[in-house]
Length: 567
Image 1: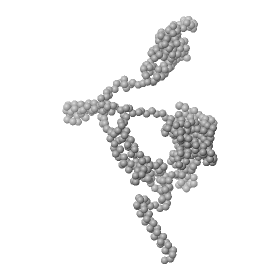
Image 2: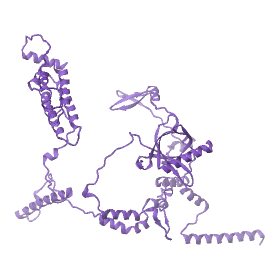
Image 3: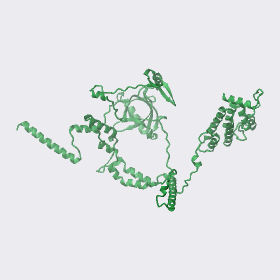
Image 4: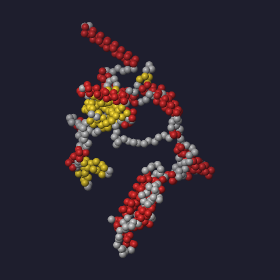
C-alpha cells in the first residue's frame, strides 16, 4: 500500500469517527444532523431579512434659534407580504422571453345602448361631495396639494407621563445626530437628550420628511442605553384622526370584589413572561419580541423556497419552531393551574335554560290527541303549556335583573323616548317635552330657536291661510313655555322678527291679535324690556299703513291673500 492509499484510509477512519461523535452529541442534546446545504437553508429560514440603512430625513432639528443636525432612520415598520406578479401562461408554454402581464385599463361611457370608449384627453378626476362629484383638472390637483419644506421643528415640551400610549400611530423612527456634522453637534444632541431624560419630558414637533410631503404631528421621547443615545419619533393623531368612542362602565353591582381582584392579580403575576425560571432557578424573559416571527411571512417563504426547487411539491404547514411562539407555554400553564382554578371559582358561570313559547306557533289537534285522547289528557297538556309560559316569563325577569322584578312592560314605556328636536309634525308636543327635560341646560334655548323656525315655515309656506292656525297655536305654546322658564328675551326677539316679516299678511296677523300673542312684559318676567303698555301697543301700533277701500267681500280678500302667499 502506497503513501497516498494510507492517507486516504486514515482520512476515511477519521470521518467515520467524527460522524459517530456528532451522532452521539445530537442524540444526547436532542439535536439533528444536517448536511451543509440543508443547514444553510435552515439558518436562512430563521434569519431576519437584511434591510439597508437608509435615512428618511436628514437636516436640522430646530429648537427656537438653536439648530442640531440630525438624521432619522426607521426603527420599526410593518413588513407586508410580497406582491404577486402576474405571469402569462401562453408565453411560458411558447418559451417566450417576456412572461409579464401588462395591465391596460379602458374607460367607457354609456350612450344609449352603445358603450363609447373615453380617451385620456377627455377624462377628468372628481371628488365626491355628498351625492355629487366635484371635478378637478390636473392643474387644479397640483394647486390643491399642500406645499411645504422638509423640517423637524420642536413645538413644545410636555411631561412624558401625560402622553397616552394609544396616541402613537404607525411606525417608529429613530432620531440620531449626523456623523459628519462635527463633535459639537453631537454634544448638543447628547445634552438635549440627557436634559429631557432628567426632567422626564417629551417633545412635540412638526415633522416633514421631504419637500411637499404630508406634515406629521410627532412625539419625540428620549432613550439612553449603553449602546447609543437617541430620540424615538412617534406620529401623533390630528383631530380628524382621533376616535372619541364612549364605552359603558360597570355598575356598582357588577364591580369585582376584593377576592376576585386578588385572584386575577395572582394569575397575572404567575403568568408574567419576564419572571420565568429555568431548570436551574434563574429568571429569564420567556418571550423575547426580537425572536417572535411573523407566521404568515415564515410560512410563505417556506413554501416559496420549496416550490422554487420542486413546482409539484405540496403546501407545507408552519414550522413548529415558529408556531410555538404563538401558543401559550405548556409549562407556564401547568405552573399557573392553581391560579386559573381559583379565578374560575371566583367568577362562576351558570347556564340558564329558557323555555320560550311562540305566539305564532301553530297547534294541531293531533298534538293533543297523541295520548289517550281523553278530555283529561287535553286539559293536562293545556295546563302544562301555561306553566311553561309562566316559567319562561320568570326566567326572562331573572335574566334582566333577578327575581322579584316586575317584568310587565307598558306600551307607554315602549314608545317613550327623549325628544331632541322640534319637528314639524307635532311641534307643540315636542316643545313641551323638551321643556320638561332637565339633563341638558341648553335645551330650552335650542327648542325656542327651532320652534320659531317651524312658525316661520308654517306662515311662509302656507297654502292660502291653511297654515296660519297651526302657526298661532305654536306661538301660544311657545309663549307659555317662555313665561314659565323666564325666557322673555328669546320670545320677544322672535315675535319682533315674525311681525317684521308677516305683519302685512292681514289674515295671519288678525289671528295673532285675536289670540293676544303680545310680547312678554315686566309683570310676567322681570328681565323683559317691555312694559305692559308697550306690550299692548305692539299688536296695534298707532301708525298703520293706509289702504284703499275694498269694494269686494271677505271671500275676495281671502283669494287675494292666497295668491300673495303663493308668489
